[in-house]
Amino acid sequence: MQEELLKRLDALAAKLGVAAEHLWDVLVRQGQIEGMRGVVLAVVGFVVMLIAGRKAARAFRENRDDATMGWVILCFLSGGAALVGQADAWYLLNPEYFALRQLLELLK
Image (cartoon, one colour):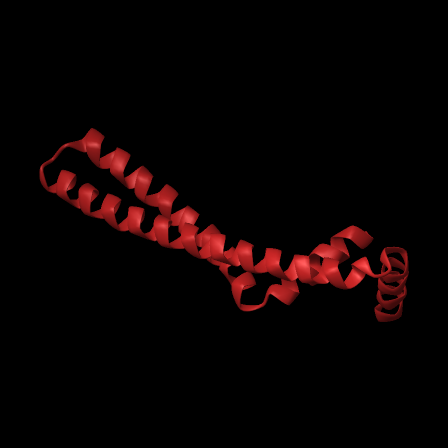
């Protein structure tokens, strides 16, 4: 499998010529951008989750069931956004992995 991958990468580099190195740089920068987007999404989701959790606790203490359910749903949705953002944040630490994944997707 590794030999096949190397053959495909060589073929792609031959087709792209001088642009191959530029493509790699662009993909690495895109990985950094995706990572930053993930960090922002994770932080925003986490902050909204904290705010919604506090509002849900306050509404629960005041026995407003309909408001409590809305805040709990918002809390779970923003927690999901935080998890999704955290998954993309890894690209900030290793943008070359993002670039390699993109190239492998092109070769399929």
